[in-house]
Image (spheres, rainbow, N blue to C red):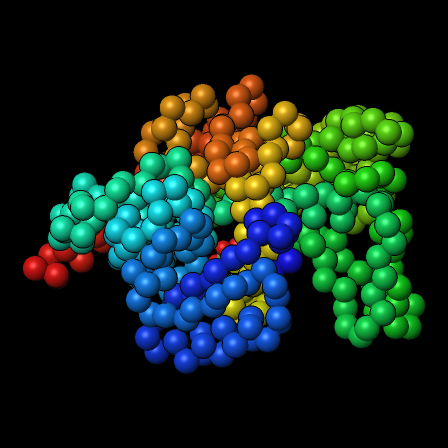
Length: 398
Ligand code: LMR
């Protein structure tokens, strides 16, 4: 609405898609968009017909699907959401522009992204006259959302280690910790919502954009691997490895809530092992479980942070170029031919450089292969389940 995603001054026509029962509410939403009086939004259509929604589309964001509820994992949605993705894939192939770029957000996002492009397995669903007469969309035009996980990782690092600015909470209620074990002290004076600052408990004074060089690899699931091995912080005008910066500033002191101050035998942990322990025992699980925690708190899955991550993803992929800036981003893309030995034919989050609608998986990282294998195995299993679901839908359609 303000040109952040597609570029300043770029006009957009919006087609909103939902199931028939929800089109009334969607029309209300369309009215609200009109009432924002944006001179960039030239048309808003609310529809339950995927072919209307995707007609002539340059960009499609696939959000629609059965939502994850408390107690569910994302892969529990395969049976419900894969047939929807197959239907959307067919409508996209038939109606969208050849150059359409598709971002899949509905869960399980990686496997859904694979299934949107699936044509060979299910002739009834995908290979009918409409689909085969439509131009095929290259796999490189599809991606799934991993940026929410990367944003969560960056936010948790900045929250726990870096002092960029003073954060104040002036309304009532307890402050929500970003990562599991960072909590308000027991003896918070009088008002629990009293002003707290990052400086109270953080270590690094940073300049500019906090940290960079963090990525999330693999599936959008509890097997994802949040990778901070290349994290850098800007200090005295220079980007330096975060671990070096922490060492320079005296390590991870007691009272940060990040580490137990001493080991069981009473000795202080050395910085390297303390850092690695904090990453594996606190940071990685916190990123992996963040979606679940949001659902537990809200009763629904993330909305604002997901919308923000979608905007970040689309802006970097379609509009701005991250090429040559050291600012790779995490994106779920087809694994075919990747340099890390992840099996072909799954959608997997890698660090990529991107811009102008293209992406390239970045080479030269030394990821934790055991972590990548775990996620790849899970994705292969999800693919098997998803294909079985498609076959079952096909049998029922006959
Ligand atoms: C998220 O990570 O917040 C979303 O994928 C929603 C979910 O199911 O967790």
